[in-house]
Image 1 (cartoon, rainbow, N blue to C red):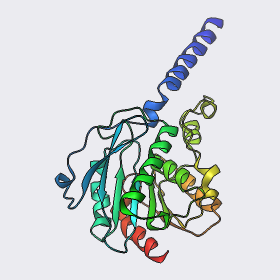
Image 2: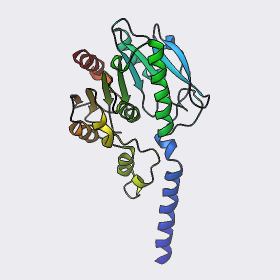
Image 3: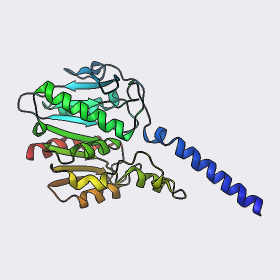
Image 4: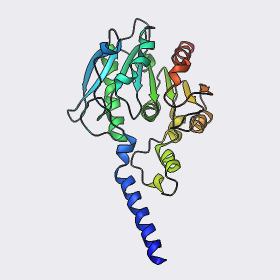
Length: 264
């Protein structure tokens, strides 16, 4: 009996150790290299490589806004190269919005290893660079975060005056998601990259739009609802009954985003 108890604890420990050591591979499911923008039917979209703090060059796709139109800075989720988001940004570009689609370290052919702090640092450099390049300020910018990217958008939007913030399928924190996935482990105390959206959400001063599918199989809908309910400034939600994690754009989400921007 003691032998089986010991064996059970040993297996429990090994699995837990494996999860602990591989957590960044789970959080950052790094992607391959995309094609060129024109291969996805995108016109007037340029590849731009940004030098960040340690001489790593990060790929971005940039479509400059038409006169008097804002720029949407798009932070993607954890499993895509930026080419897989071409169909989304095309809807905004076609209406005259500028779009800056950013690829993290380790994604879309970029070198380097991502982490929460490194992504924050790189993204701050990105925003400073684009504001200088286009001679714009925060009031000309919409921060858009998708899934993992909501953690980036929330962090960057704190105590700033951006035109607006859009969160698609936001989570309360990576720690809480991990705890739900692995309830027999104390994972919330072992996570390196917490992306704690819930604790930061009321530091956002800009109008907020939250998009979430009620059948989301990756980030529970209740998390998006919880963030929306906690936020105590100007806000709007679009919760879609049949939508899942990756198919919100099949339900006309782009139009909801543009309507939100127009009414700010």
